[in-house]
Length: 418
Ligand SMILES: Cc1cc2nc3c(=O)[nH]c(=O)nc-3n(C[C@H](O)[C@H](O)[C@H](O)COP(=O)(O)OP(=O)(O)OC[C@H]3O[C@@H](n4cnc5c(N)ncnc54)[C@H](O)[C@@H]3O)c2cc1C
Image (tube, rainbow, N blue to C red):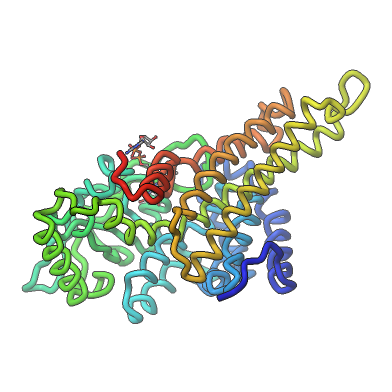
């Protein structure tokens, strides 16, 4: 196990500086334009592909860094550049992780390259889990996948919502119900290959922030995919469902809490979700740091009453608090990432803690940055207004702040707090 460290090594510093250069020279200058256009910034994704930032190899390398700092460092730098563009660059990773976590070697080898395309023809992928009536409450998902044994095909019907890259993706990963009796244990993930009939984009959302990232509904109308598109394969699914049915029988049916309460039983599944949360925390740290830097610079240069505004404790102390909270958020994120990579269990929901604190910090710090810039902060001439709009997403996606608190409280107490 790698020792926990608060310092990047020389190799990590080199990668960080390279990413920072890309964020400063390519992403940040394009941010305002793509925010206004509210479109996927294909040319920027292509640039990222050319230099090797848009590829599974790059993220896999960072992920397997035993210090655990590779992914948070990369996310912080890219999102420091701009959150909407950075999400367009890393959004495919959500679907790729879905395949890596559940797919066979053959599925990984077939589908992940098609998610990214190549530098001359970049593609994106989408991970579709949320539905209009199943957001925080994933178990109430309705999209149904039914096996057609005669044709060895799965038939998928339903409507997904809020899918990042939904409808414009080359490959969609869709989570669907295969056994409605089993709640979230009766879900399975499917690849929907490029050009599959029946999959279409529904409404594209006009959003408050991260407007360069495409978010849309995905409608699945009698979508037929080959049996080979079930992630992990049929045999593994049948075994998993049989185990879940046995367990449900043993505790008197799904919905009836076992003697020790749901808290402990659910922890295994929660632990899996927990591992991706520090990465979102790191995105939030990137946005918060960007706004703080703009505010610090502005406060040192803007003069009122014959002196820089930072000369007032009322302004200087805000900046002191902003920086303290950003550093604290980063430490929580790094701790959780180190734990996840080194297989240390999140006994106090450390992954959720990091996401909760970092995302709330980003919202607060970006609002303070607007205040420090005064009227200028409120305009689109300066980037902090955009950063504040962008920051609002971190407390919503990948589990809202309330859901993070629920996970933390349940983990700490071992009780089924509602
Ligand atoms: C820009 C964007 C991109 C997204 N990308 C994706 C994606 O790529 N793929 C995907 O599958 N999903 C994606 N999502 C969906 C996202 O994960 C959900 O929006 C999120 O999980 C919340 O679900 P909801 O919006 O239905 O809110 P709801 O679950 O309806 O929650 C509404 C409010 O009620 C609160 N609440 C709900 N239950 C409880 C409770 N038990 N206790 C206390 N408070 C509670 C919530 O915290 C929230 O404040 C994206 C969302 C957005 C906005």
